[in-house]
Length: 494
Image (cartoon, rainbow, N blue to C red; front, side, top):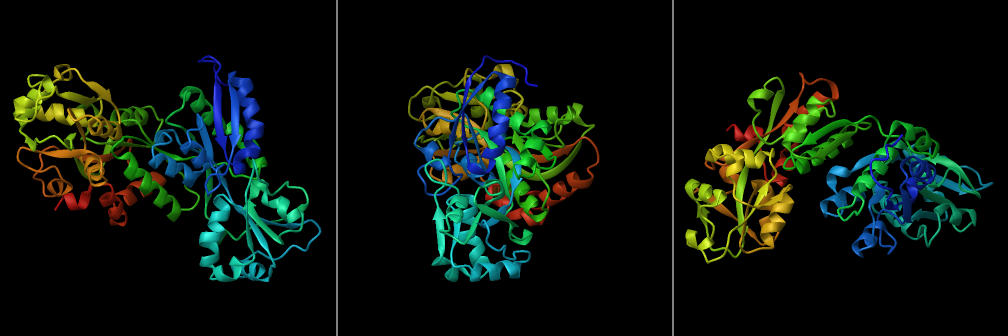
């Protein structure tokens, strides 16, 4: 049941074909339970079709929720199109194969048998979305038959303006057809042969996410929770999908979130069948979720406080807090006194610091987040002493604020700010107390505004929880730490 906590709303949904069968049954149930109305647009998860969901969103078409391939959802999250913390895995899927009704069912029970079937076929068809992209760009090359398949392969544009792969096979225009199993198992005019060998499956999943431009984020989130609920699992299974396993939930610091998401995805690939659900929200929320048994691991970008000593902390890496200004600002560094006077409003114009005249515009983080706590503790200030400011939450928001205003200043995660500056954002990092703000300075312990990034549990880790933490702090993911501009824990000890 869904409580009617908000007025009925129109929720605009963009959805790919693989989950549509389950959604077509679950959507009306959600409407009846919530009072909301679903306005649905179909399109492939990826590909060059103008109907593909990423293309629709790029053109500015309206969507509150997207339901599509998990990898495509991750890409939309990186591009700022969907809210990363809203992503929820709804189901897992496999690629299957069909032949025309009445035709003999070829052997695809092993990798070698499957390869032989492909080579013997006169023609094949695959979709223009995720499964077809995988076959044409990865699988055929992996089997060493890319050249042989090129001349007899056909890419089929899917709904809404196109058709399913099965329709092409049913008309006899292709001998073999490949698509995700939910789109094949009940298709007319074809015989479902089975899933391709497990060793060759790419591990597709379907993910629901709220867009950053959603006009109805609460209703959109309610829909995703409904589709991910235990009550939806039988319908999802009936549609030929596998309900995802119960995830290990990791919540907290928005600074750690991108790194931990990458670690989790790699861990899942190494451990098939596992599911790690990583969500941001801030260090304080991570601790609150952990204490409320809403998560298994908290991401925290500070040391544990005195009233948190009953929890168990595990050092992940180190980062710093960077003082960030617009790239055109001639200022090069600040001392602790100058920073304190700027934050408290004693310094209100850039000319007081020897820069060009202009009223200082501060973007400050919400209370309870790790970065303001680090600054307040370092400068011995209280929250009420901070001057009037624009309130922001995420590092990305802080950097956008400064990049768009030559008189702005903020404090952001050093690794994130350093990467943004190198990527061309109109910002620069000020030296502090004579030391440049850089990952190198954090590594050699000369930069004083540095902090630990830690993983926290309620008790001694065990099982999957322990496996993930051990992996996250191991040398196996050093490249991911460096990618995100952090100093791995083992290096920080040197």
